[in-house]
Length: 72
Picture 1 (cartoon, rainbow, N blue to C red):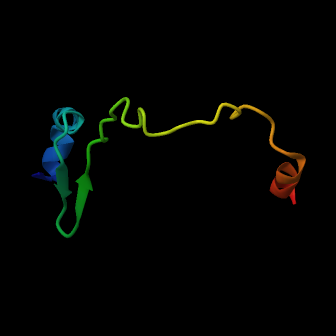
Picture 2 (cartoon, rainbow, N blue to C red):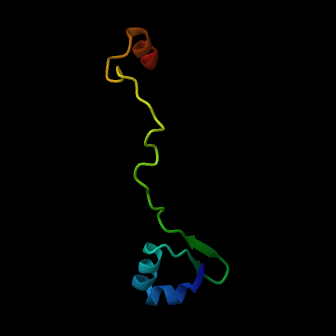
Picture 3 (tube, helix red, strand yellow):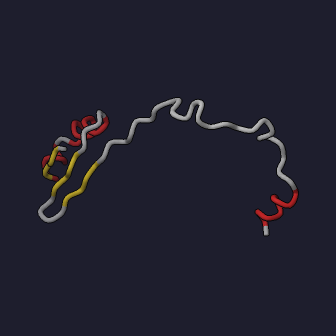
């Protein structure tokens, strides 16, 4: 994790954002405060493959009683 002074960040913002985009965690520091910038987590495709089972009738309308419960 990199600690960067806010003044330096103003001068090198584009470079810092590129580092965050690559996964680097950055701490921006002022005189009395620190702010952490975390990179967006990367998503993995297929992590629920074969773990979730949908019923064959998943697209059928719900019974009237259940629908009414949503609106009452």
